[in-house]
Image 1 (spheres, rainbow, N blue to C red):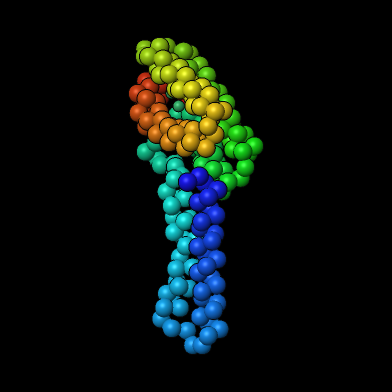
Image 2 (image 1 turned 90 degrees about the horizontal axis):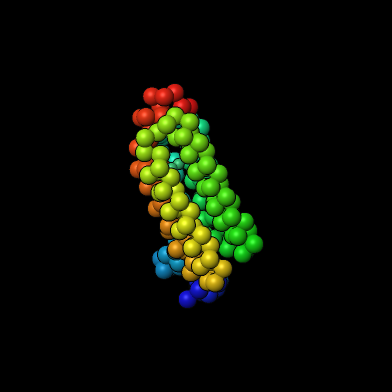
Length: 188
Ligand SMILES: [Fe+2]
Ligand SMILES: [Fe+2]
């Protein structure tokens, strides 16, 4: 079932519940069952919001690599990926979804160029290995973009899953490896 059908089924369910509650109230004093239905109606948006929030990434202090400029860029990447997730969750339309995806891809490349510049400037010994990882990520993103052109809906889910997993691994794993070295050289 695609997303539009999901939304349609949910809207129909909410409408049916609302009508049932209305009819029950009009028929006489509210029974416990009527109040239960009201409870379900109230809880639906709360539960949906909870699920949506769980799909977002939140910045944690433990993600810091100790270099302010890079932390700021990582935060911006998190924001861009969250914005992409929101555009999908709220079905804002393919045009905006594409803009969000392009913004994530563009900023990821900008970020890599910046990081590589710092590593090169301070002669980071594992510069080449880190660069290879950036290139692997860039290649994967290009694959995802090609898949998105063919199957926008299914490819977007894969893209989001990959981007979120990759971002945390990148921030909290790969980038932590250069942290001590670059901080000791005075990078900020
Ligand atoms: Fe990074
Ligand atoms: Fe990196």
